[in-house]
Amino acid sequence: MHNNLASRLDQIAPFHVMELMKMASALEDQGRHLIHMGIGEPDFTAPQAVLDAAAKAMADGRLQYTSALGLPALREAIATYYLQQYGLTIPASRIIVTAGASAALLLACAALVEPGKEVLMPDPCYPCNRHFVAAFNGQARLVASGAEDRFQLSDQMVCQHWSDKTSGVLLASPSNPTGTSISTSELTAIIASVKQRGGFTIVDEIYQGLSYDAAPFSALSLDDDVIVINSFSKYFNMTGWRLGWIVVPERIVPEIEKLAQNLFICASSVAQHAALACFEPETMAIYESRKAEFKRRRDYIVPALRELGFGITVMPDGAFYVYADCSRFTSDADAFAREVLTEAGVVIVPGLDFGPATADTYVRLSYANSFENLQEAVARLSRFLQSRATFK
Image (tube, rainbow, N blue to C red):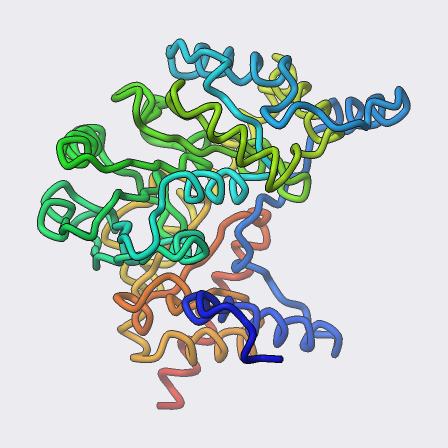
């Protein structure tokens, strides 16, 4: 039976971090208290108004399929959000509601990736991005990027690595795992270079609402041909609701709609009705206060980790991750993360999943945890590193 499986599966790796999570779960079953800094989701959940809207939709029986493009009212609400947050006039007709950002990326790759063609992306990056490309028989071309380039692609890298096989670039700003954004000038140059070569630019902006050091910014302000992905998971704290959106040029809306009809039918109708409450002024005020709390945590955890000896030469400006160089302590970040788990009781993620360039020397820490837990995690890491140094 195994011989009948599609060869594309060979290009799709499992999450290595899931093995770490199994270890963590086993330790918790034994009664160990762990502090989780590994999971990439907010510790906040949907505000009460969102829960109430979902309950009302269910009570009213509004549970049927919606249009494959999404509820018209939700598409309009997202368009208004772009106007209020970014000062951008984006027609609701260009906004397609999806079953999470993952579905949006699948739709984009289904529409744009040709078999055998390459898509450039930075190394490190979110592992699923390369697997979305592989799912449509494309090739992810990872380009090693370090702290000096904010772990992002530069225009120079794009031009240097573009070939006859390249069809486009897939970027994320702010990024998972690094929490870093691409500068406006660099992104402008990349989009121009890609367009000149007849390629596509996809920008994942699911963490854009959690940008701490600059005014809100979207790649949609730079070019109407850019395809932008966003989500209700991160800023809007709705991870399990599986709801996102994609903004595409007007001319390809019918093609994306056709794909959405066939692949997904529609996003969850309950989640869509609930998401309308996200944009109410009172709810937005809650999100902004939570964003301020994330920034407070970042401003604590980065200096604390530096004090412990982790290398963090570029300040993460968004999301809720710190990508830290642990080469002072180890040449095997995966083994180090397991040791931190078993000895210190802190869950962190090795660079292994995010690409080969930083696999052995970096770990990702999520500060989507309470301030008190972060303080306790730092205390545990401090004791662990001191005992380790003494032991050695």
